[in-house]
Length: 327
Image 1: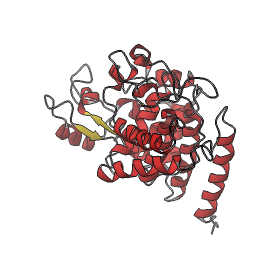
Image 2 (image 1 turned 30 degrees about the horizontal axis):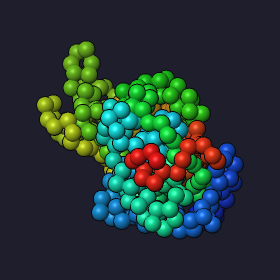
Image 3 (image 1 turned 90 degrees about the vertical axis):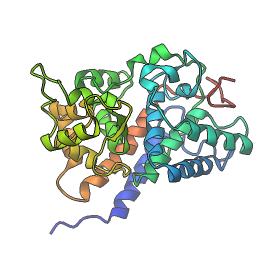
């Protein structure tokens, strides 16, 4: 019989490896606020927790907020700015949630150590805490980001979209220094996500020239989705992206994609591309227990990489007093 290392040993190796990775990200370091604002991370964590206790689905909202921020102008809090022509008002960002969590944390941090902690760092820390609260892995977040001074809705038009082909998604991720492995791993965040009927209903009715549904959808699941999203029903009705455990950060999302139970077309398409399919199969796995550790190890690595996209550090940008307004 094969002897397995105890899970705590695997976790210890993961933590040590992630600490090293965090320290090597350009211009960022773990514990950046250890002397300037020692309670910074604890304040963010308790804020996320209090919102999460009222509404566990806010975890996915906060995680998505950080992702959408990093893909436009880098991870600089530009998605938080309000205004008619700001990033926040771009079409792909209209469904974003979690702004109140970030604003709440900022208010408390300004009271504790004014002008020290950036909104961009609050977002990165809150995303990590949201995953942890959803029974996912935790990791050391490299901090030291500064807030950007530009937020333009026109720049958000190139965000990854649920209707994108894998080739297009690959190109959008590659433009940010992220590879196929990062793409599939980060899409795994959909394990706690939700979406509106509006964004996938076209797959359920008249998808093919002959008027049928998307043939990649599992037939039993198709009937479920049609029940949740009738043809002329409310397009804003929210549906879980992981039908089995929508508030638990686990690998059932990948198992669903493998079984034809992906809700978004872009999620299901991961199975139709040779390279992304291999990664999905690896995460979905067949051995119970082992594969959870693998995704738990890979997701933090991908998040640390994504959280470092085009960051502003040192004398660049600013530290906003209010996250929704430039100083």
